[in-house]
Image (cartoon, rainbow over all chains, first blue to last red; front, side):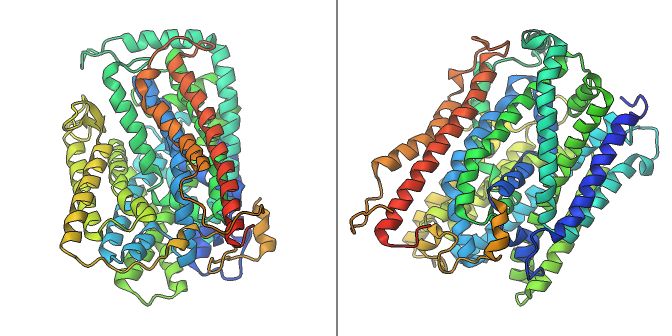
Length: 542
Length: 87
């Protein structure tokens, strides 16, 4: 792998990296509002983003470097099973269409910055709000760490950093620099920095995908050849597990897993704090609905990208660490300068979501732990300061995570993160549509889901690890293999419903609901909906 | 804004049923994995399993777009009816 530094590719990579760094710092001046010391300003970009910026931001947010590396890597490793990412992203949009505009409206009426804010306001329960906040932070941290894994993969293939024989400081220096830069501009520019950089990231990625999907198949003799070769590779029986490596189309037994993974992941995606951050920063609820009609463009890109996994097999890329398959394919197939562009795309693709995620986690901490529990009388300025600091801490934490622990640990936690975050669905989405659920029942359901999900994931062994070896397990009562997160979610809902009935019968206190039905349909321009920017600047987003 | 009668329109209307169908269709299609877990027919060498799901990206986009347009019309009608601040 480390057969010397690829100078041209590295040069191109550094060029793009410097360009976005400058953009990141300049972003603070972009569409600046009067009151720059509020959390709305730093953490939600003044809630002023129009359709296109929101589209770039959400795209930059959801389709991360890790996605770009991991989805084709999964295909490379096991074939069809890895393609679940495509139905998953298809299912996300009808879901968003249904519930996010309501969240947008109620958040703008009451000035909510996080999902926990909403849960507290709706159910009058600080405990439930804390549970949602902690879950959000826990699930986001390993996600940020995985962005670093994405950058590391690229640096490895370029021949900088990854060598085993160099000392740790030289080895990790490029990563440290990348992260120092990221931390500095997130600190100074807030959500505006990733929003602006997302333009560059997406443009680069679209160019790379378009070229890769045309150029590589031509070089490899067309899709017929690619799939024929991949089919052969998948049919070979692994001597350790005595099973074939994978399949081109999922066998009967894998279909439940495929469907539950797609559905569970789709339900979980918009529970992540960073997706909510990007959504709430849009300036009207129409922007969100309009976005669900253009966001699927990314799914198409993801599907094409996934096919690269097959191309890596057909091109004879042999790597022990599947994460390196795609960067290695680019290095083998493209001329050096274009490989540099491709690596820059992945690298910048890691910075944008890492910035948004750390901002989202910081917002959660500040609003729902610091202000609710530690310092209830914090001023807006203090809130912003704490948020900025926490966003730094979160990133340092992620960095330590990646540098000190085995990478598989980060991936395990990411897997757990998905299972955990899904357990906040009943409180959030349930709460958006009905006040029927009882707050204590929701809390109990959440706890059951968390415990079951964690225990089940812990108990899965794989050929390479004893615990957390996968995310699918037999569904109790059905007997098919399914995604643990979804099973835990169903348990969660069952517990919530049963306990709600019981608690209502016992007349347990319901808690105060500060929202009104019409809050859920309010739009920009309606009375009581905060509009942060004067129309002249806000209009630039169209 | 079209003139609509003063009475509050019903919650379930034919238009809303169509919107719901547009939003539910992708779930049925994608979760029924057995219907597309096969390699033939291929399209420019890509097995059915893959191009079919990618085709559904486009289909679901069109469906969401229809749902969006219908919903906008529905809302405009209602706002007009309530005399509220329609955009």
